[in-house]
Length: 167
Image (cartoon, rainbow, N blue to C red; front, side, top):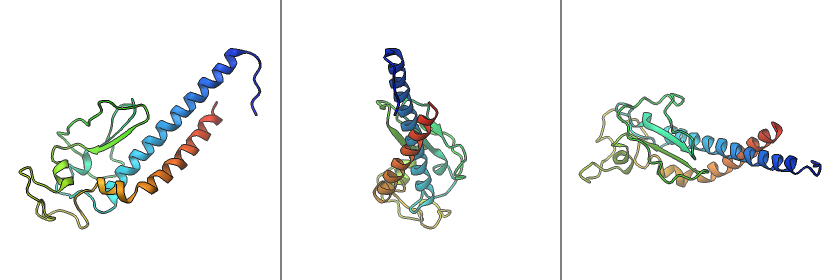
C-alpha cells in the first residue's frame, strides 16, 4: 500500500502518473490489437487475393491521436503505392482503426466489380492464392472477436503492470 504525506502536490503527482500509465497501457494495447487484426486478415483464410500484392501491402493502423502506421514489412505481404489516406476524422483517444487503402480494396473485400457485378473467385486474377476470398477483413470480426477481446485484456493487464512498475 502506498502512503501519502499530507503534501497535496505529491498526491496530485501520483494521480497524474497513474492516468499517464493508463493512457500508455491503453495505447499499447490498441496498437497490439490493430496489428493482430491485420495479421489475421493476411494470414487466416479468407485472405485478400494476390495479384500484385498491392492490396495486402496497403494496410494501415490508426490508434487514437497517434500518427497512422502503414505497412512496415513485418508481415511480408507486398508493398503498395498509390494508396488512399485512411479515414481518421472524428477519432477518439482510445480507438483503433485498421484497413486496406488501395482504391480497389473495397471492391475485392466486397467481391464486386466497380459496375456492381459479382466478382467470383479466380475471376479477378489467375494468381489468386487458394483460400483467398471476399470479406477478408470483416469476416475476421465475426470469427475472431472473442480471441481479440481475450488477448486485448491480457495485453492491457501486462502493459499496465509494466507502466506502474516504471513509476
